[in-house]
Image (cartoon, rainbow, N blue to C red; front, side):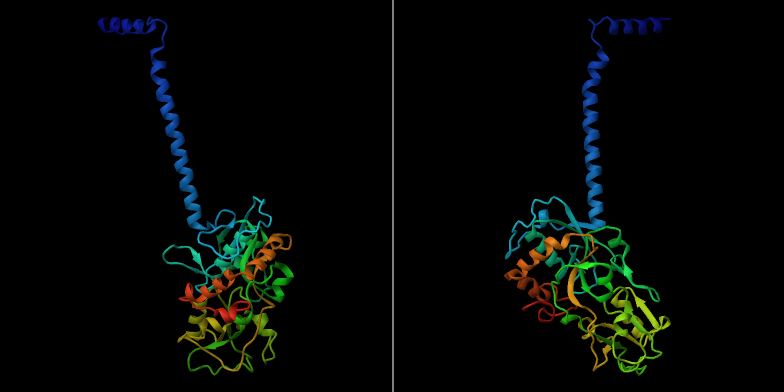
Length: 338
């Protein structure tokens, strides 16, 4: 009973404190603190999510295409009132045009330098989206080559650095090229010593390796004046990257590989068959887009301005000076007017 009276007295004291709600006056600052804490936590979660997305597949080139330290052709205001974000796909083939930098973990190379400069000149906000090449252009053995699901579905506005070919032209449109096609002359590669006695004059019954989705494909071989073309599907082997192609040649899974000469000419793992080169592309590296995309409208004039500047020559020079630790074409082979 004593305990009950004590509790009752305390309750009465709270009720008769001059009309003040003691519990409310204490909880108000507590509620404010909780709300502030929740807002801070939400902010941290959103920031972490943003960082995670960038680390996985997308990175910003710069606000309206700007990048620190650029010299030469500056922004000329081509449609610079456009607030749209332009997304371009890019891969990494471990070559001087596109590769992953070990220190930064980002994709670097000639193609990245070109896109940075053109977007800045055009006053565009551009972003890269790293993706596999087959989502830009897909070629399966024995099937018709076709556009990749990424470009078809509008995951991005364009795919970076694709050579203009007859087959691709039926499906997509291309910007003006930002490189020549001299550096993309292709040839046949075999295991050193040519133990399978491969000759390019007659490839009947020979198994040939190709890089999946590249312009140096079986349709290019079919256009050559040699015996044994077109190659039947059972003699066509596709590889996802050049390392796998070289391994296929080394293991004699194929009699020869078909690839641009500049990337393997100095390799001690394979040797080029002399006396034969071919050209598979109509024009050099370009931005490949769906036919309903308007990116070319600002890209072409912006690249024309870049090409007329000293910055283009610097980008070409960097093929060797900055990116030459990876195989690839020389500035003389790849660039206009160099």
